[in-house]
Image (cartoon, rainbow, N blue to C red; front, side):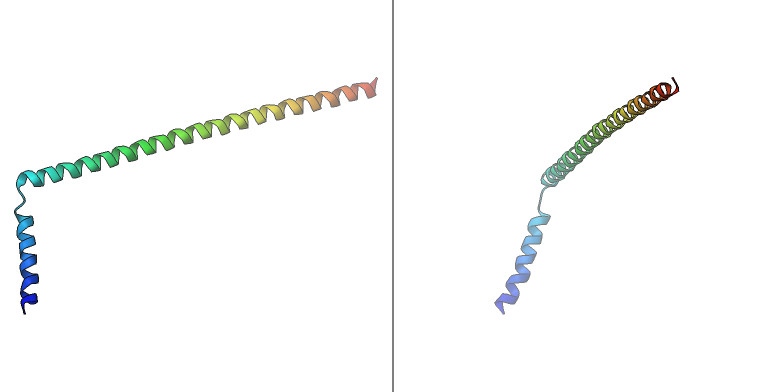
Length: 93
């Protein structure tokens, strides 16, 4: 029977202890929670900025590589065209 009485008394004591927290303590806990949330938001924002910058750099490098490949293809096509033109001239003369 005493076990049945101890548990409700322990729960009541814990609830009374929580209710007895001062306004200053509750404010401090609230401020700490706000600071943690602000830090998490700042960290996430920085991570997003870092990912965006890395993506921009990667896309820029890919664009440059594509442009370079297109230029080389144009040069090779011009050289082949010039060679065919020269061969045609040799045959004609």
